[in-house]
Length: 536
Image (cartoon, rainbow, N blue to C red; front, top):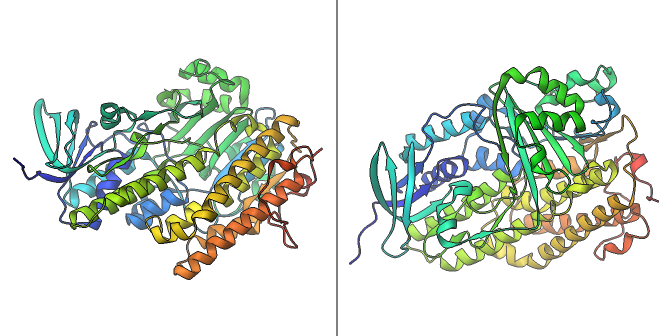
């Protein structure tokens, strides 16, 4: 006997991933019957809620353009002044004496700092307004997966045992993923790192950490505190992120072997750790410890998953599936990517179209993006305190991100299987080249002392290639224009690899077997001259 499910889609978890998926599904299919079951009661607290406040271009485009939330982002969240790295900040008292990497002016495509509590409250209100059945303050108890007759979800709400059935079920419960545990889908990776973070109910302004007027004046448009500020060191980085509520998020992210979690798994231990590695930051936190709002830590945060999309009409999104690393803030990116694939699969199924083949192909693409991005982090934390290698890595990583993955997403091409097939060989070539560049930079940093000329500024806005790639994300391309842009960007990456090869020590230069001669117009034009010479 078969029965008709009461819902088209049941989403387990009403955090960032689950609520944004509910909005996307409703916008794509207004008549779809969607339920979201969330453990926390709404409204949730602002500021002291969840980590993951910073967005980059894919995530920002997803929230702003795909979900249409530009008004909220501009009025209720903070515009982000890009990524900003400070090297040697733990050895000086004045930030003007560090090596700084960041933009001197705001680049074209906006990104945002999210107060997660405020944002998720808004998403919940929007979902309910569009007709999503938002069941918050409820705890999922069990799940029977049945892709033919309908999945059955049992949960407790207001001390009552409840049950719904759904044609599709999507797990967005984060690390507590019910489907992952039920089907044994958990998978580790080779990136072993930990994090501890807290929030202070005051804005910590790094501009106060220098009295040098020239340093103050070299950034225009937005103040430095609106960046995602990073204090870099061997095996670690410290984030300082402002929130629209007026609070500041501070976090330590570290290689598990170089900086064990046991040295930072309480607020007092974090403060002691900061005093040893970033004393200027420690003094600022100590002066405001009365405003401590929360403290959390997480061991081995990076993880994979054996399967995320199933032709049996279930899927995982957000941290329930895979999670890379908070550096470069890719969490919202992969929410946008997975939610896009899930929405396309569900829409095709509800329209009576065949979707099963695409399930396999989308998962293969999703995992290829995950694995190629993971190479940015695996074994790379030891070089984080090396200003020259880390500056080159950041330029390479952004060129790879803006030139390939962000371009595909912002051009709405993630589900374009024809385009993916046409450029499959090029995408695979870039993936291999990325792995080679990461290895070269890692070995280069290990073989040389970190050079830190005081006061050096690596201005990303002053690198023509950075400004251009960022600006081009906002252009709309037809099929032929997209083909040409990808081919041009593949060529650009090969030329950039060639320039890095010419700068690396001769003993390591043969690490790259895919590169092109830079030609007469160097990609790194504008890069600080003291970083351009061949390394010893």
